[in-house]
Image (cartoon, rainbow, N blue to C red):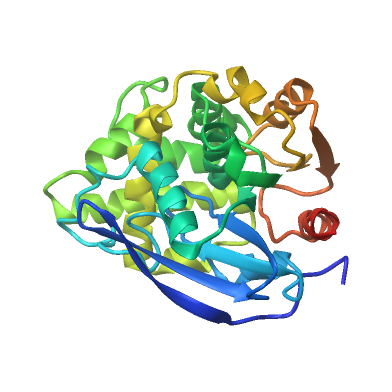
Length: 315
């Protein structure tokens, strides 16, 4: 069991929670209704939760809570539809949504599990509500700092030059140093549908190249998913995730006494390991585990380390 995911499990309850501004977030709970509460914070931004996320926890031990962030997955309105506004979709809103969900479910404290962008949101939530967090487990650690965002859409091009040249050419900019996130943000907000669809496809093509490498993400085959994912990612990263530079590292003292396991792949091309190392150095209550893997949570070494961590936290 330690080397693979736990067996598939279905929710014992699910629903939609009205979080205001016309938004309703989908949530579900799996495993043991009387078990240790654990919240899964998915990546993206905008990827939505998946059945695989349920399987990082022993269902006999944990009450596993998943939710789709605003605009993604089964939450409504969906960002893949024309006319869906992202005005009320930012990091502060998502933190408030997590608290609203915790209160709705009658949970006092929970383990918070995040991967990729989800680790950024988990850290921000933990810093604002440390009294509600029992432990933190993070995979593919990010803080969405401007340097990390610049690396993902510019610096990583040195590792994937052909893919980056296409990504750059499709942005409609002339200079090699032009802000590609800003360029795609403009394209994805164009009144021209064909322009928006082309930008979404090219954005996801680059994500495939730098994040998953040889294995294309089948979710990108869905035009609605592509559009929502590209819109939400560019919306968040164009605005710096509404965080000050180095905000999470500066505020790491707010996580004092919260045990944490930070898991990062040494072959992660999209998120350099320096972020995880710096966070671990500044957070005495954390343990950094470096594994032989890339960025994806489903890689065998990531899975094994994550399940070891949740088993330890489950006691």
